[in-house]
Amino acid sequence: MAFKPSLRAVLPPEAQQPARDMLLSLPETRLSTPWFVNVLSGLGAWVASLFLVIFLALFLLDGNKTGAIVVGLLITAGAVVLRRASAHVFVTQLALSAGLAGQGFFLMGVDRLSRSEAVLALAALVLQLVLLVVYPDTLQRFLSTLFAGLSLLYLLRTLAPAVVADVALVGLTALAHVLLLQQGRFQSRARIAPLVTPTAFGLITTLFWVLLMRTWFQDFYRYLFDREGGVPAGVLTLGLAAVTLYSAWRVMEETQAGPGGAAGVTAFAALALTALLTLNTPGVIAALGVLMLGFHRRNTVLLGLAVLFILVFGVSYYYDLKMTLLAKSLALLGSGLLMLGLRLFIARRFPVAGEAP
Image (cartoon, rainbow, N blue to C red; front, side):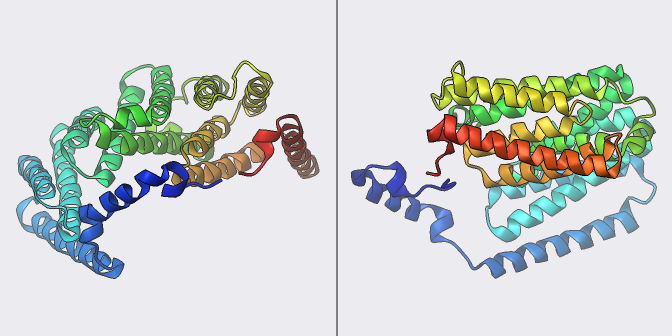
């Protein structure tokens, strides 16, 4: 599979030269600088921001709760203005580092003033939602989505019944799937186009972070929220499986693979069987959904994330099996043989799907 098709593969001959001319006219093409210059500029910006943070922490904000909030908001607002004024790598990195420092000062002041974790989570949620819209930077928008998602889930876990946060996690997962499935349509709208990709990646990272905490750090997860883990893992797995099955149906519709045909039934049966076999490890079916979207959108970052977390949650699944080491080894061997057999079946039953392009 070619994840980045060439111009020749996607454009007719008469449109290739105009496309090349347009690409060469872009500012990032004409004003490109060596990578090491960009690295040094970014490093210099972060060092400058670090000295600013140290100065403010030592001399201006020591014990001053309101001052930390005001200065934090001023620094964050200044970072937004600075980032909007220039796209130079030094300015970009300086604005990003200063903005993160400003957010830290603001949240530190809110925490000292309120002494309430719920108020702190609410302040972080509101701040990150505002920055998601007004800060024109992909990395900051990704971080804003991640922190906003975690703040929302923490707020729900502390103030609402535990089941609400798990339902919200499934909802955030569904939103990420919709953003990636409808990525082309959303990116055709000028106002929301820059938000689509970083928001989707931020939501997926939120999903994996929460599932990682639930799976590998259960005691710390319960201690963090001071309550039980919410809905059983099996129920959460079924919710994530429903989102994955819906996405599989939409992908088959978009690729004209016939979701109601033999190929669709085989895919749905395989996903449903995987979900049922890994009921106590919801991360497996969640990672499979991301893997499917990565292949569909030809996004190597999504593919890498999905493969990494399939391995992480797969290890957890086999670790939690109530079996002897020999039985676990045989189960692992049987699973591998089953996957190989399924691949051979798909290659023989659906030759087009099994052939390499």
